Image 1 (cartoon, one colour):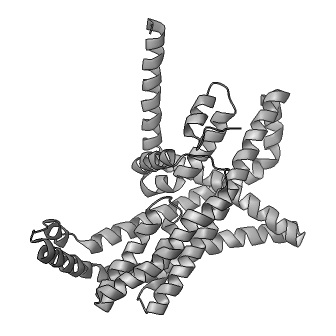
Image 2 (cartoon, rainbow, N blue to C red):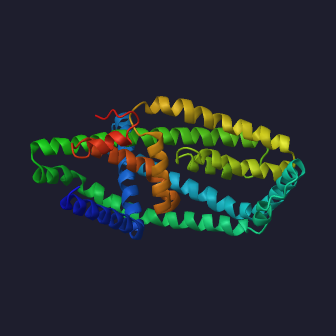
Image 3 (tube, helix red, strand yellow):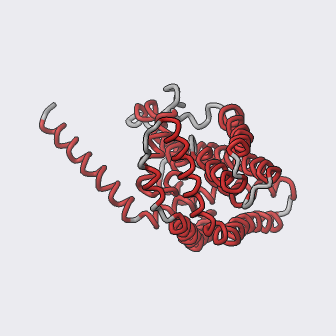
Length: 338
């Protein structure tokens, strides 16, 4: 490797770390912009869906805006109405940990110090922190709506601007990238929303049939965390599972409840979702795991939520240029990129 290549590599590393630093210190702006971009895609798709069925532009705009506003209001209402009373019950989880610790000690003869540690944890503060995070996140909504208004107002001039910037061939490539990202992300969010809703609704019915308290709150957790791939949907089930120990005082009932809750997660996550996605997302499981770790550590749970859409968009962009095509092949599931 000659001096020029070493300098290029060194500058590349510096640029990469500077980019990560900028993403970190400007996370509030970048998160708002990325959510604005994704919401723009979703709202545009919803508008064309309503337009196709109602044949009325004004009515379609009202339906699209009303659906989005109703969705966020519903989530806020469920969280604000149940999280305060639920957080008061959280310290009782320590009784569960102590009980399990005693059971493990009697079975193995070893003292598990983790239970002493957990006994000192203030779970009320933890869930208050979660509620603070949710409240802060809802604060992004104002900024996002502000961005959305300007994007929709300037949408009609966007194509004209692109025509001025690029030549015909480059313009076609640009719009092919945009259309591919739009189609794949619409599919991703559509499938994710449907599967998360199904999992949340089925979980609610199961918990309600068992008579579990705060079933609506736990079902909302299942719905929200199901948007984060891999194990987060299962993690959401741990909350009603642990709480069932407290309410029913019966390990058998708790494990039966958990079994009924895991079934829909397993079916949707391992059978239905892969069939609905097909090969459209084209990301390897290892890349998804790494992206969850990277974006989650950078922007916490918001980053984990955005990880797959961001990597899907980047993979599409990388696949359209010869210089970055090898990167797209590495990110893809089977090395087949279009």
